[in-house]
Image (cartoon, rainbow, N blue to C red; front, side, top):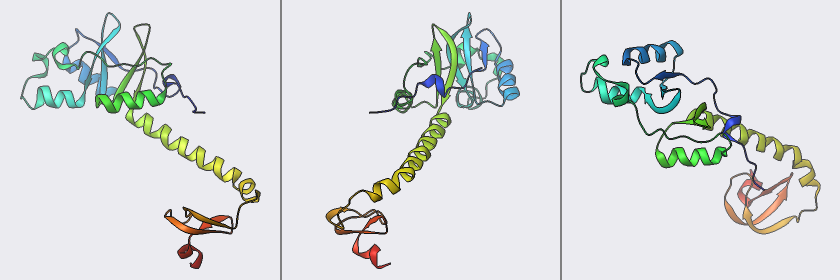
Length: 182
């Protein structure tokens, strides 16, 4: 059974937005004010695009353009790639990798509900790893007390991680010959 974690449970709410008719300098000021690397562009309060720091470097700075000579419509990345809040975190990860994006706006009923970033996904992955490790440790004593053969012909050594022949059960771990000696 696979545990499902919906995107809405890890997304950041209260995403910074700016109207498509705004000036690039207003947008940059808002990004500085909130110390963020991207901002969602809206048209009639509906999300239509995203501008990242990379977009500004690529489309303004590298071309030596004056920021207010560029419209947000020309600067933003559109169409906006989004995900519903009910989708699984694993689906969000796969979509971000496939589309090569680091931010994924969460949209419900054509309205922006939040955003999930690559950092959010890394943090939740690390936390899940810690939880699994704790669960294994909690159940280790029970697993050790179960009847385990003293010798197993082939398997993975719990100390070095190698696939070996002739594992033996020593102090609650299945160990290869080399690890038993140390």
